[in-house]
Length: 443
Image (cartoon, rainbow, N blue to C red):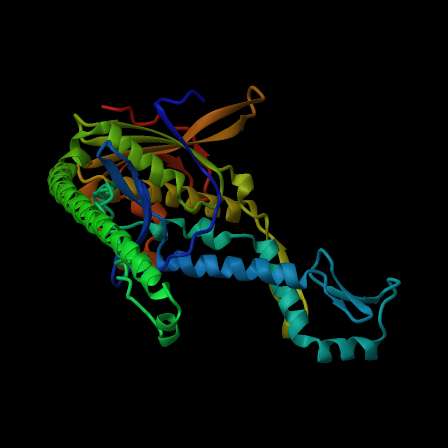
C-alpha cells in the first residue's frame, strides 16, 4: 500500500487516565514543555524556546475512557495477583470449557470435601482469579468498541499559546561590606608601685606616647578604608540601578513580544501549515490507542481540509472468544464468537477509529472545515494469493454536521450509523463483510 500523504504517525497502544474536565487550571513544567490541568482535561504544552512556536496537546481522555482504563488496570492487577492461585496445598486450573479443577501439589484431584472447603474458605480469592481469567479471554473489547467515546466537540480543544518564560535573571542588589572594628585608643595605666621604682613611670609614659602615635596612624587608615567601602558600595549601587533599568526594559520588550505572538497565534492556527502539522503530530502521537495503527495525513489550507489515510487494525485483532461467569461464579461460560459477531465488532471498531481521528482534527484546528478519512486494511486476495491494502471505507466529514453529535452522551452514538450521515464510500453487507472501495481523492 503506497501512502498518499507526507506525514506519517504511528499510534501506539497505551492507557491514559483522564484527570477531569472541570475545575481550575494548574500548570507545571520546564521551559518548552509543561503540563496543564484545566476545565478541558490534562494537556501537555509543547514549545520551541526562542522561536515563538508553542502549542498545547491533550493528554487525558474522556470520563468514559477513565472508567475503561481503570477497569483495565484492575484486570491487570487481578491477573498478576491471582493468576493460577496456589491455595495452601491446592492449585486451581481452568480448562478450555471454563470448568475449574482443583488438584493437590502432585496434580491429583481433590476430594469432594476438600473442594467444598476450598470454595468456602477461599471464595473471594477464587472469584477474583476467575474474574482475571475472564478479562484475559475477553480482552479489551470495551476499548475496541467504545473508542469513539473519547471524541470532543469541534473547537473545544483549540491549543492555547504558551508564552515563553523570561529567563534573564533579575539583578541582585549589592550588599555593603561590613566595616572593620574601630581601633581602640590606648590609655595610660601607672600603678602605685610603678611610681616607687625610679625611672619606671617615665618609661611607661614614653611607651604610651608611642602607642598613641600608632593608634592615630591606625585610626587614619581605618577612616580611609571606611571611605573606600562607602565609595565602592555607592558605585555598585549605581551599577545595580542601571542593570535594573536595563532588565525592566528587556522584560517589557519580552512581554510585548509575547503579547504580539499570542495575538498572532490564533491566526497562525489557521494559516501556518507547519504549526498545524506539528500540533496534529503531537496529538496523534499521544493518543491512547488499543491497537497499533498507522496514520498518514496532509493539510490543504486552500480547501480548509485535512486528509487522513489510516492503516486499520485487522479483524484478527478482535478477540475470538468471550467469557462470562457461570453458576454461582464457580466456573466460566466460554464461547467461540461467530464469524458474523467478530465482523460486526470489527466494523464498529473501525468506524469508531474514523470518528475519533476526525474529532481530533476538528477539535484542534479552528481553520479546518472538512476532514476526509480513508481507512484500509491488509487482506488476502483469494484470486491471487497476495495481500492487498484494500480501502474499506472513505468518508468526508464536515464540521457543522459533525458538531450535531451528542457529545454529552456518546455512549448512545452508534459509530456505524454516525458515519452514514456524511459523504461515505463503503460497501458493507448487513453481516459486516467489506468490499474494496475507491478512496475520496484530495481536492
